[in-house]
Image (cartoon, rainbow, N blue to C red):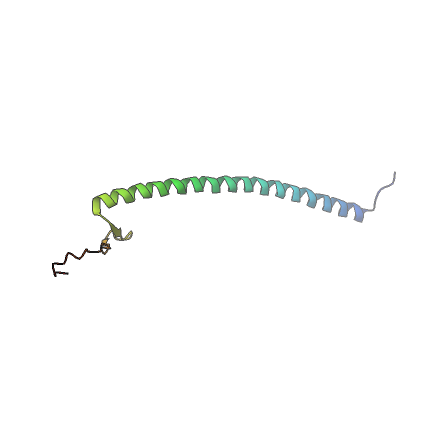
Length: 94
């Protein structure tokens, strides 16, 4: 029976092991990519939900405090300057 040299057999075995390791790594990477895509999708849904909650809260705050800004760090209410334009009623008081 003919055999390859010990040196060639070791090279074949080493390269074969590398191929197997690469296949395993590719499979793991595909699984991680699937997990990552699901996580991104879940986070997008969660962000949309939180954005809707923020919109509802903003509407509630506007009812309670009027048109203003709120410092998110301190809770301080910062009134918005009025953007209403007064109509000249020709009374001379403006």
